[in-house]
Amino acid sequence: MLSKKAKNITPSLTIGISTKVKELIDQGLDIINLSIGEPNFCTPTPAKEAAVESIYTNKAKYGPASGITELRKTIIHKLKTENNISYQLDEIVVSSGAKHAITNALIALINPGDEVLIPKPYWVSYPEMIKLVGGNPVFLDTKMKNNFKMTTEDIIDVITPKTKMIFITNPSNPTGAVYSKEELKSIVNLCIQHNIFILADEIYERICYKDNFISIASLSEKAKNITITINGLSKSAAMTGWRIGYTAANQTISKAISAIQGHLTSHPCVISQYGAIKALNSCQEDIQTMVLNYKKKRDIALNMLEKIKDISFIKPNGAFYVFIDISSLKNKLKYNDYFSISFANQLLEQEKVAVVPGVAFGMDDFIRISYACDNDTLIEGIKRISSFINNL
Picture: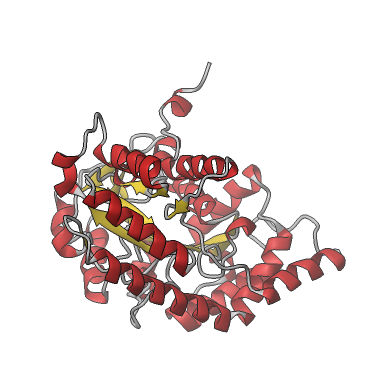
């Protein structure tokens, strides 16, 4: 009954875990949730007020497929002043969240059989998105000694005549790694040489603990021409449920994305777009406060994790996750198919702590925890993880 595409899709482990955690909490269980990839802040008040005002001033009619002009102009200003990239109005398309923006870009560029390179570890939905549009995800291994950042040597090993695109997530989910300018330059030059498009997922761009975040499209005009920048408001402005993301790309690609979106969804929610304008224009202090808070939580988490034996991790310089190597615990834990799933299930059952198994990101020897939670929850959660490991 189902299409081959539908049968070929793996359900999202992260969404599945979140659903399970909510069910356990509803049953009255004391669950510490370190699995969720959602800011523990509320949307800044100015953004909320702008959205409400748009309702009462009747600015809730159909809008342009690419997004309302005022928001696209605001995004252009943001990209120019913060990222040093110049775009025209017809090079920006606002979508219903960054996930939707990525899917639009894939529909616009990927033909059946095209290969899309995905460095491991990767965000859980990338491979499924690629398969849905008829492309073939090709995974490339990265090394922990390189903070799981891919190098040109890693990429060269998997390039074929069918390679059409590569994903670069910066800062990374799940590792929190942030690429330097020189690291990005070498990758971009390789992509230019081999005519490979870059999908630059920069949704965590503002949650960066280094002062020199570099947007890929800012490196050169050639880099800009082959790059589809993905960003949005979900993480930086705590607007997850508002579903506002966007693409910045050359005119040909953007025109195609706009046409695709016009047929599939018409346009993103107009009310959310008015909130997004205010978030970009008037909520910089709120965003900075969130980032400073995340950095403090990161330091709390790392100080505690460093004291737990038999685990290791890289120091995250962005996002709000720690990707933890638990491979040395394999001989202490009974498991069948997937070690990280067994670890996560037993941790949830015995200590009531929810984490994401590393297999969701393509690496079964790891788990991911999120520190986008209140300090008490974070501290108690890591204490319980420590107790679980010590008792194995």
